[in-house]
Every structure is written in C-alpha cells, then in structure tokens.
Amino acid sequence: MQARARKALATPIHPDNWLRLRLYPVAKQLGIPFHPTFQVLRRSFSTHGKHEAHPTEMQAQLGHSDIRTTLDIYTQIADPEVARMVNQVTNRILGLGEEVEPGSVQ
Image: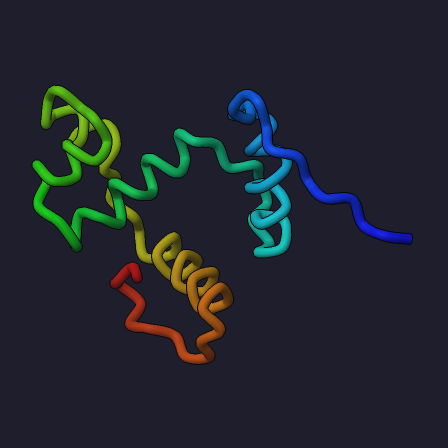
C-alpha cells in the first residue's frame, strides 16, 4: 500500500484544528498536563523574552499598542518551582541531561 500525498490546502487551517492536530500531541509527548492555547504561547513568549529582549521589542513582536499591556498583563514573574519545571521540560526537548541554576529560566 502506498501513502497518499497531502494536497495543498485551498484555505488556511483553522486555529483550533492546528492546536488539536499539531500542538496538543507535542504537549502530550512532553508530559504537559493541559492543552496549551495561543494565549499560553503568547504569555510564555513574553515572560521568557523579558530576559532576552527590550520590552519595546517584545511589545512590537506581540503587536501591542501600549507597553503596559505587554509588561502588566503578558509578562509574568515565574516562581522558582515553575522555573524548575520549565527548565526540566526545556532540557527534555533539547536532550540535555543537566539542570541549570534553579532561579533562571532558559
């Protein structure tokens, strides 16, 4: 039996279908106990990006007209236990065996 080739889509994939078909299976493989959404991805991007980029760069990437939206709503402070879990998941994704210092988020 020969595999069928995928046809090009005439219209873009619906965001809910993309989450269900692409993101949820990856989250399950990583042991994430909930279904992440685009909102979770945006908040994670902003929270982890605060150490990598200037707040105005994060504001531009997220498309916010007011910097306060980026800093007050999207950027969150991760407690040490959350940072530890994030580092464990990141290490699993990257295939790293060592853990980084407890207070930092990769």
